[in-house]
Length: 233
Length: 84
Image 1 (spheres, rainbow over the protein chains, first blue to last red):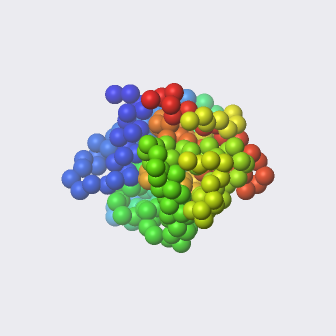
Image 2: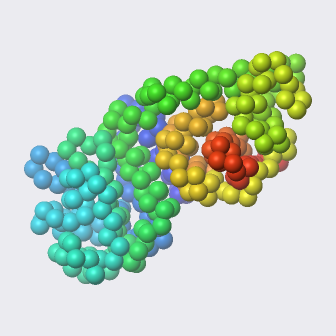
């Protein structure tokens, strides 16, 4: 199964949680996809706080589980700290890292030189996505951090459905839907009397926005007020 | 339909915009987009490949942001006709 198909399956499952879906299989896919976050990633896992301590609920390779368990044993390390505090822990160069010395020593034994632990926000007690890499500074750019954050939110939605507020009717979302209603009226106006489908009509509005160097919302408002900007139809 | 815009990819536009993922999604929803927030984020980061229509909606969402800051549609669109 290609990585892109696995991403599509994970993002689809996270976007539309369904009762009866095999969450364990989805999380197992997610930790495999952790290897896409940066080229030098050698392991990915999920740590959960439990009533008794910690547990690794999924790991892509055995070394990730071993590194997690080394942290559980001393109650200290980036995955423990991220799960407990809800804050991201990024260790750029483990051999030179002054914090978490016990973990750094175990990591060095396994050839791991940097790590990133991203909290999973919806967990009742706390949880974190952990990424381990064989090169220092593997997570230093915006892109690895952004992909890791996306992966953590996908895991959050799958493991703790209902905890995400992304689809709730917040004030910015209400405002966005009001703007969308105006655009939709303009789309219908463009479609009237033409053979354009909805996507093509919306594309026409976007094209006008670019040609006239105006916001597409301005173009839409002008159109539904009865004016025809640049021959929309 | 001739589309154009600048030469930034979605990922480059996302990075340059400084948008949080939910901010991009609100802008996208405001254009009538109906994909979920995580899907839009995955498209914008390049871990999922959007079709031309979804690509152009996200490009437009980013370009609306840039336009409000005096920049003229720096994110590239895709030609829907070329893919059909």
